[in-house]
Length: 163
Image (cartoon, rainbow, N blue to C red):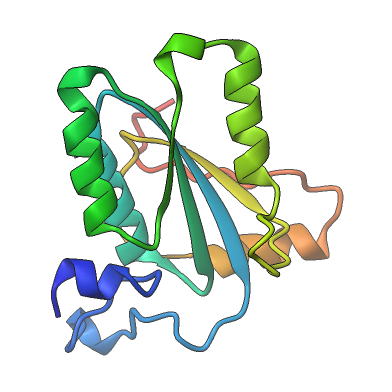
């Protein structure tokens, strides 16, 4: 299955996953909204998104990218968007770059759109240079947040040397 075909469905899948582990997320109902911030780094963004799609399990991912792109990078962002049609892309207008325009983009992505009837209550904020190198059960983090209301956030740390 090609990358574009498998990603269209909101997850990465392989015909024969390594170790016989199901990578499909086909029997889950928990939704996780993911907001990814990117500026002039379409290659890093593509790696970030595909590693997330490959490794996040137990949830339906609703991925939205807020990006700023100079003229040199705009076509590359268009290519990434074409390869990942299930991901929503919203470009920040460089001419109106202000806290209010960024805030409006963020508000649009955080709120459910009019064509959506989802009940997404959890958000994962990501920058475009994040990579997921192992499978993780995002549903477990959501279950913790739902069960223990005093817990406000769950942090994922990818490497011991990162701070």
